[in-house]
Length: 205
Image 1 (cartoon, rainbow, N blue to C red):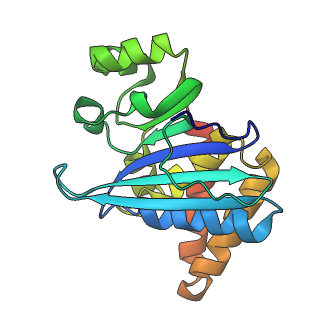
Image 2 (cartoon, rainbow, N blue to C red):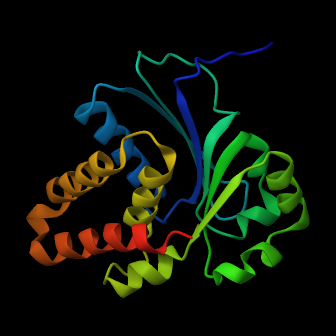
């Protein structure tokens, strides 16, 4: 059956690992948009333990009316891949719509990214005329003192590239949510997360 979703619904699929903070930050994104704006949101979180190392797939929708889609996102405007090894074995590009954005966390220099992508991923990106953004989220997280959690970095990158909220509103909303989430743990933790958000903007290539 053909499933037509309204043009003004933004759809995203995010691939993460069970332990990396991806699902938590996506649930947080849903909350930020659902509570802090007039938009409606839907999040489905699929845990697939068969695909080596418990892959998590977050299916997110954002739009101006209540969203009651009963199926997973298959024509995403934004696909986020939080680990480069997923490109070899998961159908990352397949779930993207034409002209979509692929957001990739990878430890590669900007000028070597294209060479390192699997051939079929390159072909898919070209065929669908997608935009590719890359960030080294682990290095950034370590730099600001967040250890191995890439949640805040990738959440910021998501907001900056998904167009769900206007740029300034998105950054303000993330920071407000960081204050709410981490305020009790003290100023240092809040500052580290703020730094992660600011650097994410600068480092997205």
